[in-house]
Length: 463
Ligand SMILES: [Zn+2]
Image (cartoon, rainbow, N blue to C red; front, side, top):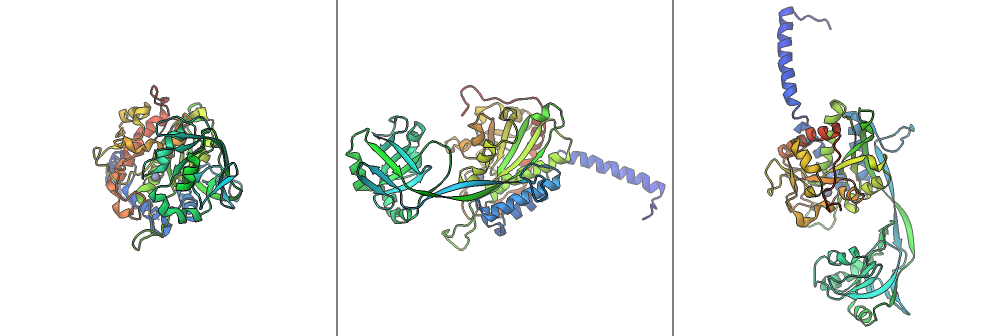
């Protein structure tokens, strides 16, 4: 087409153009567009995605979608090779799952207590566990590897949590006498063959004993040898991470890495949910965090390349014990001593009434100097107002933190009752809040990626 613009029109166009540039510059303060946030949320949390169940084909599709977006934004692929031998944006993780072929048993001398009959295997991470019996009350310390008979467990509630101090102190197994709750679920738990993901973690099992078998174990002397186990078969399960990166622009600083992450899976479909809706859409948990990672990636890829390298990673199977991030942590694509910090984004779709409307909270804020430094650079980050919830331990950041890496989760989860329910839907998302939240993190992250600030744990606060 010919250029027919007259000179006067051209001047007007330049004036309009400069005004537009002015607008574009002020718009640069809010690089993330609510429309994009809405679009991605409507896809990820749609019924079509069936709640992105951990390890399901829907989790895989989510990873491919996020990867495809990363490609569109201009990130570099950091996943496995594709059909053409070149890296893709998706990493497939194989998880070995072990299932007992027959019901496992506790063996004490000639007596065997069998799963589904005299005992229930609530959970185990090993096919075989041996140890010596120690009968302990709450607060008493087991010897390393002991099999603890819990003398006075609470009458109800979360037994895993009640037994946790024994495991933390080195017990390999905790046996609890049946509660009314376990008795009512005995047939259904007992009919399932126990299964676990293969791991190198130290043995850990929680066993419920019937009244009679509990009494029999209680009559044994401390130090009695107990053996647990059975034959297992191995199956391969999979989970998928989406990974893209921006290689840093500075020759030296580019070796240093910041990881911005979320989990892209959720808990899928629950056929037993009351009412006609069976889909756990996972809009807040954690489509919202995934969209935050995507939109920060879009903004950073479009701007001046930061000095340090940034990995954008959306993990699979967080809801099944952080399996995608565990694999990433065990197979880091860069040296661990170059890992500057991890920020995980979790549940930022709604404001938390416990903090100011604009604020986000950072799990473990008091543990390191990262939160306060980001806050100095404009991040609206404050201390987690729900310390009893242990959120620092409840997301993918924790697997990095226990390896010594400064790793926290950014959130505004106000303990709403839609958590892990079919009602965690897009219609409950506060899009202006969510967009503002993501925008508020962009500049502080750019600062971190261009600085030589190396965050550190506060005295005695390293997990
Ligand atoms: Zn989550």
